[in-house]
Image (cartoon, rainbow, N blue to C red; front, side):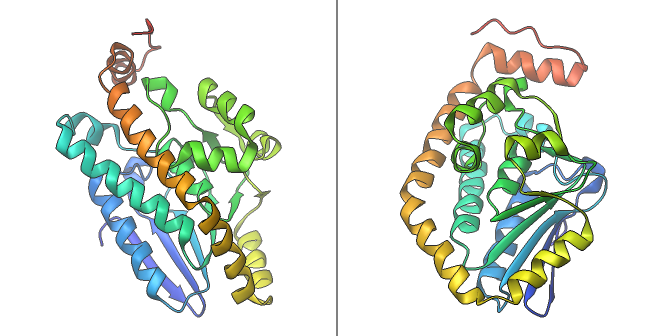
Length: 253
């Protein structure tokens, strides 16, 4: 794998997003490799999985360049199917998962982080569900994971505002569970490994089973609505503004 690094240390697997030159923005190849890594971990003897990013940020979201290249319907559906499988696999994974985020944590990158059981951010993290800036809606199960974490009302505010939050602001909203560093991650791992982790995983799987249909429906609706939003004038304007580094002028069309 070129853009995903998978390693093991005893009962802990670490998945690292490894495209630092693009702030780990998720392109088609990287998404496929991430799904491959999750499937490998699923079959492994690891009890805990830590997901993190190399370089200056965790993940800036989906790759805008990939989005521009994926103009045909078939390519779009393929990418969204991979994203769907990543979300479902993480949600049902019979391991305890931790996302350790720093720097940029945006869009699809935030959906990925929230799909984990526990979210730790360092003090330099900047968190945003910023699809609204390019006239799109969250994907990767973002609606489901946001609602699970902070409830529907706050979720809508986070999505509609698209605000970039500091780690402290994200903690106060409830998006992250703890502000910390490498030592914080190690302490959480040690804490979990000292517990009857089989029972903890059983509880996770029970909750995953109860909400599996809701997540699947969310992912399917996200794909359908995302396909519609890609055809709007507002989306085209959002992309142009992003590339031209200016504020977008939306018209509600």
